[in-house]
Length: 88
Image (cartoon, rainbow, N blue to C red; front, side, top):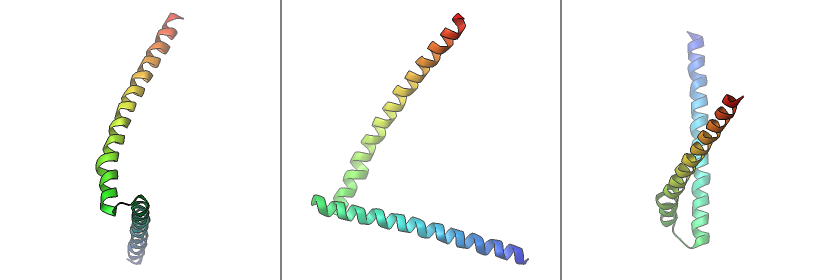
């Protein structure tokens, strides 16, 4: 019974450490956004909207297009390689 309690205690310590890490990362990012907003002469909310509702979707779409291009390119290279192997 004692082993189970120790395992639970260790799990709780690890989880609380992980949660604290997440909070710390969030706070650093939030402070960075506040600093960047002040530097740009914007409010935190305006910068947040600009980044997450405008820039992020644009970057996401651009990356999807690039992935599609790279898949096509890889497929064409695979076809060329297979054709060359068949010639030998």
